[in-house]
Amino acid sequence: MKDKIDSIIEEINQFSIEDTQALEKFRIQYLGTKGLLKDLFGELKSVPNEEKKEVGLLLNGLRTIAEEKYNTFKETLDAPKATASSIDTSRPGEDSSVGSRHPLMLVRSEIIEIFNRIGYTVSEGPEIEDDWHNFSALNFPPEHPARDMQDTFFIQNEGEEMALRTHTSSVQVRVMENQKPPIRTISPGRVFRNEAISARAHCFFHQVEGLYIDKKVSFADLKQTLLYFAQEMFGEKAQIRLRPSYFPFTEPSAEVDVSCSICNAKGCNVCKNTGWLEILGCGMVDPAVLEACGIDSKEYSGFAFGMGIERITQLKYKVNDLRLYSENDVRFLKQFTGSL
Ligand code: PHE
Image 1 (spheres, rainbow, N blue to C red):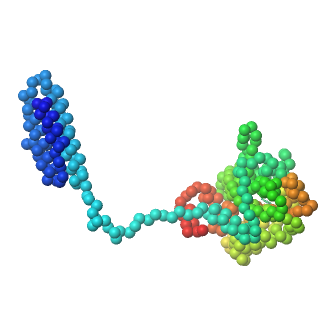
Image 2: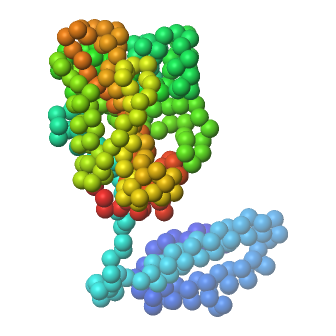
Image 3: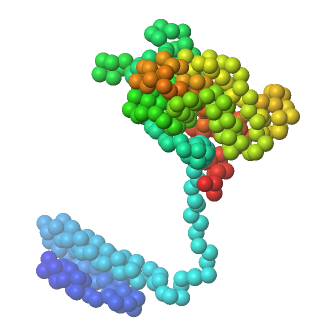
């Protein structure tokens, strides 16, 4: 009986199945109701008792081999063949959606381009800063209350206290320390302030700060540069106004408003019926800052300004909640598809 089983296994392995007819022949011969396996299981009765268990196991193994062979061939023979005629060449292609640039990056590039046209280069610096570059060189004395204007995140780095930069003025300090005037540069980048997150404030945002240092740079140059920027950004009709302000690193200092482009300065809820929107801070670089960075303040003067990219984007695209910029909601981001 055992020999018989062995030779049948051999037979099954040799059996060639090339088409469905051969497959059917195989099924009838081995697995059918009158097939070989049925006969063999019938013969099990006459096997002596002590061999029954072993022969039974062998027969089960044989059945598995036959069934597996049958199933494998059935699957391959049943599988639809991709013939030329089964491919529908008229079916429309599948859409692959195009991504979009982030609105803040669109506006960042636009600001950079506007200043590139009047000779400003781009400079970048580290987001984790030491006290000197973020504060001291910029005329913030230790314990000076002006440090409270910018709620700073401090971190420990190898025992040294470092700050997450609160403005990119820190980059301008680095530029002044390393370059000789004339200097004309803007520094775009991410900055951090310890503020509660709301529609109007976030713990990080983006700035572009500008610096111009040369002989005889005047406040009139600053005003004209900012007017040029406002008109390039918001259209020819844009007007600016300067209000006196205070920053430790500029003297005199001003805050700059641009005429509201949403209501054409007629008054709306965005400009709170004033017709004006605040967009940046600026001033003449304090001589103490020039000296701290190794520039002779008797020979050179300069101006600086700084703006938030979120604020400009908000006005340009009429976005009223700052949180939208960092939540990655595709319904928001998709609206900028196709913009360059
Ligand atoms: N650094 C200031 C801020 O972050 C902005 C500023 C830059 C003001 C340059 C004046 C001159 O608020």
